[in-house]
Amino acid sequence: MASKRSTAEATGASTAAGSATDTPMGPTGRPYHGFPTPPKLDGHGPARIISLCNQKGGVGKTTTTINLAAGLASYGRRVLAVDFDPQGALSAGLGVQTHETATIYDLLLDPKRDPNEVIVTTSVDGLDILPANIDLSAAEVHLVNEVARETILARVLRKVAGDYDVILIDCQPSLGLLTVNALTASHGVLIPLECEFFALRGVALLIETIDKVRDRLNPAIQLDGVLATMYDPRTLHSREVLERVVDAFGDDVLETVIGRTVKFPDASVAGVPITKFAPEHSAAQAYLRLARELVARGAVA
Ligand code: ADP
Ligand code: MG
Image (tube, rainbow, N blue to C red):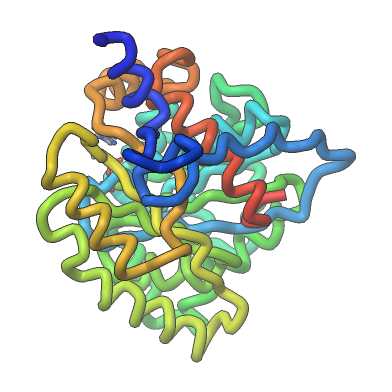
């Protein structure tokens, strides 16, 4: 019994009660797909740029950026992760020291600077990062009087987009100028939502911000998906929140759901993605499945 339960946790799937075919149902109420292993790419670039965005903190933006990036890299995609939060958690989570190094902030301030001087490789093959540190907190003030201040990040990333298949931007928990820059630079946006009380609070404002950016700055931006995180299938509460999220967003809710597990804080401390820290763990498998789902949906090459 114990092993059966851990399998259900690992897949986030359960068998639909009373269904004639016993089709496994995913936690979002749709049939469970494994998604095929993405085909090898012949060449690389230009990158599709995706922002991970939610003005609420602690919903799994940084964790998702790290582990989705590592998952896509493991399928042979060339990935650039952009730390766009002055807290620098993405940089730390990928084991990058950021004091006394050049960061994304330097690129924002000096448009002539080559991003390749700032990009660093990580311990994960195929995954590079543009790091950030607390300096970035000054950016909003410094950039507010710039001409075309919303498109500064887009202009930085344009210079390196040809070298990558996907660029993931880890946004800060606010809807200020930095996040507007991220959305303006992006082809798509992924919204992580924690399966907790008040998960949907503030999401209307986020969608409104995305709509404004689409109207005024970046007509092509798409909602790539809503990702339910920190899901605990054993609690009624978690299941109810997920149901409400599906009611609100329908098929935009990704089939992959990330379970709640202490492995994530452990991996962060180790400074590596969970796909490397505990590759067999259900949480690592969930992020690999998310990578496959995004390729299957066409959000990533
Ligand atoms: P955000 O970037 O949105 O602020 P984080 O990714 O930093 O959120 O996650 C917030 C905290 O929750 C971190 O300590 C992280 O390790 C932890 N965490 C993230 N995802 C999970 C999960 N699925 N289960 C348990 N803890 C998680
Ligand atoms: Mg974060």
